[in-house]
Length: 328
Image (tube, rainbow, N blue to C red; front, top):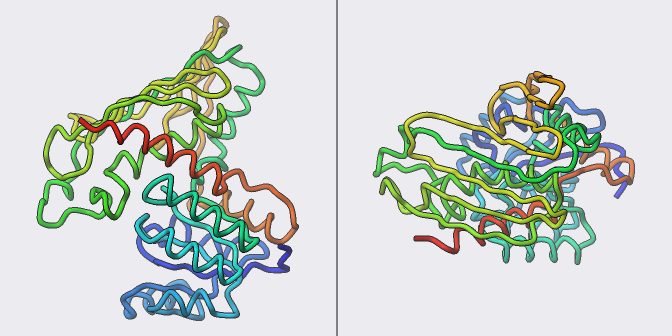
């Protein structure tokens, strides 16, 4: 596809679109946000007015079939990703879908097949693949800053948030029928996708998922080990009912190690026999913007620049499915 300007529509203009993603569509060259949709009409109208979007809908089909909309960003919970992706594909329009890509790997494959059959691209909102701090980690690896990579370890745990302690008003992110699982699916997916970007696909995975605290039905602790096709080993632990917040990834090689966080602003630290170096980065105001820029480049220049597509997004769902399947 080769648009002169990409005119975007958003399905599900909720919190994630307020700052993280929505404004970016208006700020990127050859990109424009022309329509938004939310099931509650008054909220859709309010978003459109505040963000200076000319059209708003309370019906997704109307937005999808609007001739002024060239491409659609699906920013709903995962339970509706497959349905909307297939509808957008059948309308002949490119799809940008939130992460995790779907409820499970099977749904991801249906989405990929629908977009392939329609001849439209499918992009997934794993925006960390385009953020400067993670591009720096990739650069260090490509330049052999730690020699040959041996393994990567992830430790991510946090306190139980106030919203999951209210059993009568639990957030959708801990309802498996809406989110695919619990906070592991929502948060760990970012790290697992990033590791896929840095080391390539995971070919084998083992793990356990449990609910220890009983605040909700979904898993609240996950441990896993994985083997990448590249030969790198990996191990990860995620807990969402711990006593403090920790977010550390460590890549260990034959000549050094790289330490960085997935969600925090801590500097990237390279440790070798020569000493320590570190780099600090500030996340952009609209964190989706660097990735959306690659998508717009794809759609306007008939190129292939976006690093996060349906095939890569589906791989992350496969890894999570394999781990969560062994729930104890």
